Image (cartoon, rainbow, N blue to C red; front, side):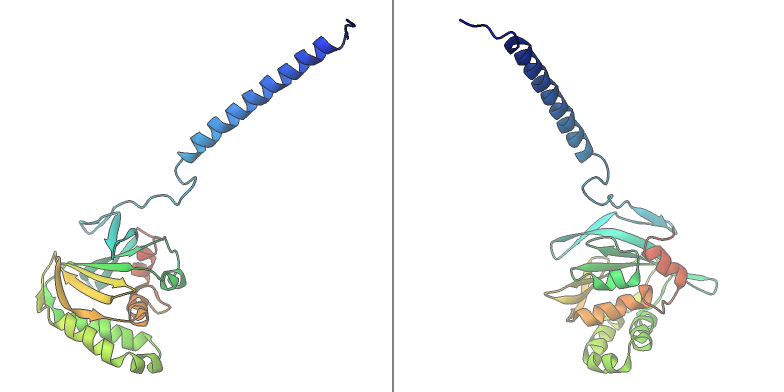
Length: 220
C-alpha cells in the first residue's frame, strides 16, 4: 500500500474546519434564540397602562374578539374645568391622525368622566363636533346616522364623575356605546361615522391639541 504523506494532515485540517463551522453555527443559533426574546425584536413593544387624573387605563382591550392596545390618553379641559380623560385603543400603534383613521379594524374610544353633567352636553360636543369638522356633503350623507348616535348619547340621562363610556367600532356592526358596561342604543353602522368621531380628537382640527398629542402617545 502506498501511503500519501499529505492525506492525514488534510483529514485533520478538514476535521478542524468542520468543528469550527459547527461551533460557529451553534453560536449563531444561540444568538438568534436570544434575539427572539429581546423586547421589540419581532414585534412592537407592548403597551403599558396609563394613569391620568387618577384614572388608570388598562394596557389592552378587546372589541369584537380583536385584541387592541392602548395608543395614548389625553385630558379634555375647558377653562378651569377638567371634563374627562379619553383613551384610544387600536390594533396597532398610530402616531399621527391619518394613521389612526387608516386603521380599518375594531377600535375603542374610552371616556372617563371627571365631573357630573347632563348627557345632552356630551351629545352636543360629539355630534356637534362631527358636524363642525366634517365636510358638509359627508355630514348630509351621514345625517340619519348622526341623529341616531345623538339619540343614543342623550338616552343616558345624567352622567357622573367616574362613569366609564366605551364608544366601540367593529366593521361588521358599527358604532356601539356602553356606560359602565351597560349598552345604550342600537349599533350605528359606518366606518365614516366613526372616523368623523375620532376626527374630533386626532383630526386636523382637534378639540384640544394637547389631548390629541396624548392620545397619539406623544405626551403623557
